Length: 577
Image 1 (cartoon, rainbow, N blue to C red):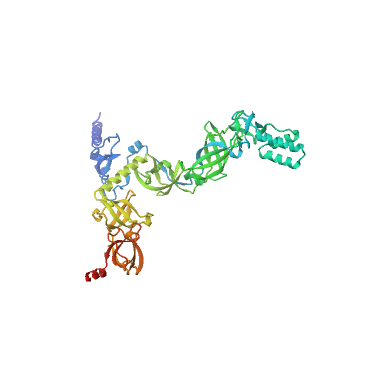
Image 2 (image 1 turned 45 degrees about the vertical axis):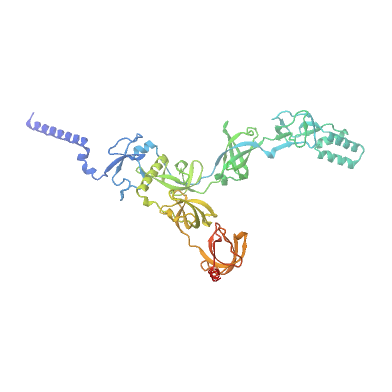
């Protein structure tokens, strides 16, 4: 082997060893050789549990729930500011957490909901094809032909025969008039028998045979099925009894209930479909026959009557059926999957997927929902990605994060706005609980009459402003929870005093008729008025006496005299005397 070959081999061996060492150092110390590239990345401050920001660690690991801890980078910690600071209402999740939570998203799109209305109903008799059988005179059943419930009968078939003494006597009189040749009397007898419920057929038989009928036959007024049977052989019957009910089941009704929110989409004449659970492959086609005018006060649903052909009698009364109505479609708007909407009772929200594991809960105004999709009337644009699965966990995290942000910077909480003002009398003060009980004047803006109620105090309102029995001017607003609170409060203007002469005293001094001087503070000219005195005076002024009086307002806002004193002129006269 030549020296040159040996030298080349030695150089190659040295290069391999050096490369291996470099690889090993790079593998064991990744932050060594790669420091230059890492210098441009954000610095990790600590790791937190995905569902509990209070659980922090200085190194990667598992949360108490077994989930991987996620890093918090410099500039994204709570309270951070600057371009890299995370939004207070944005939740950042790792891909592992997203997979664990089973997060799925869907796109908001413009569509017209409505169309078909799905509900349930029950089969009922078609009352337009139902007849009730009665008699018009008392008697006894002596020949019952139809003896079983559910029996099929044809129109004109004899249902039963019965004996009625009065009908037998009328029949005998009719035969006697016919035999005597009395045309007028015969016509009257025939009309009487008909009025008493004897059929034209039997009257004709009596006239032909000239023999009085001992039994009166009752015929079926229509064909159908006996759906109610209230007689038996030998039974005594009366006109008020329903003896039989016959119904033609060739056509039936289906009574369905429609939710109040869907009631505007149902119209008479609309196509309808019915399905039975035990015949899933068969569909009955019918129409909406009638929409009832009132909602059921208990179920808050609208009753709808449908009509279906039932030639093979497969639809039997009292069967349950699944109903589909070809409802009227609504106007096109933004819609999302129904499960994407988070309903809290006070507001509705959806969770937006912002990309790169970032999510934000936003308030929305929802409209109609068909069960699968929900209209979004405000707060969301079509094309936005919303979370349709796992959104409740993300929303909880967003609420928790926003709560911490409010605790760290309570100054960001907006003060409630004054939406109404009123005057009130303070009844009681709870300084520790920050509530007051007042009797306030009517508040037309809120539609409130004068009444006594408790109010909480908004932040910044000093309870010492209120004193039991004092008059105050209040500004009313709503807090973050939607409850009415006192936003502003100040003592009411001092009482207005006037002078006048007492013209009359009524109800033991509780009502005074006073001719008073002008009262500039109220813009009143001199005039005569009746005033209620609250509280009733201990000393009732005399008629003709000149008095000074303080004016206030009662609970209804009407002027009342709150204090009565002798006028300066009267007092001076008494001193002179």
